[in-house]
Image (tube, rainbow, N blue to C red; front, side, top):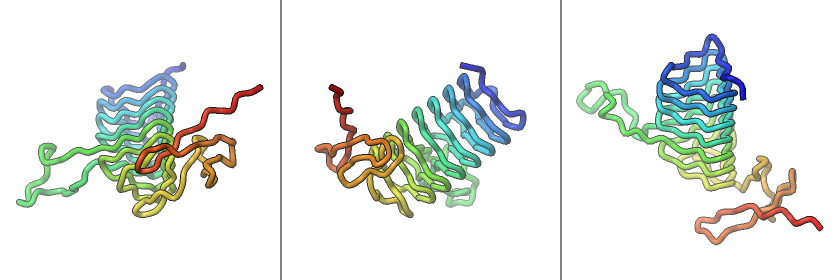
Length: 202
């Protein structure tokens, strides 16, 4: 794989790790100790906080903010102007009026699991797990964990269905109208689904 491509206007800390084949576009900022995996695309104006881990083949679209403490596993999609927060008790100052320091801050990032996708202008609150292949509709405010393959929408985001790995909404019988993949409910509580193995060919 080729060397990373970093636009001259991007600000990338020398203490960040950028994988082969990654692209970092205009005016993006990547802070110290951040790691960006091979094949990633970091769009214009994106902010990647200190120590953030972004796995392989992720796409972070224009003007999104991935703040310190958050983790993206491989293949995660972040739409334009998404914000991944990290502070459940945000204040600029302490009750006595003194400015907050690092020691006054409870860092609480989220984990976005393999293949998850977050629609444009969504907000992910701190300390959550966004499941494998989960799909978050544009403009959502996510306040709780999202199961694998779940489709959520709204403010606060609620589950409105299930999503295929190809991102289409599944039919009521858990079949994908786009690619034909099929799924089944598991015995878990709360409900969860898993993909069925493809049919064997004669």
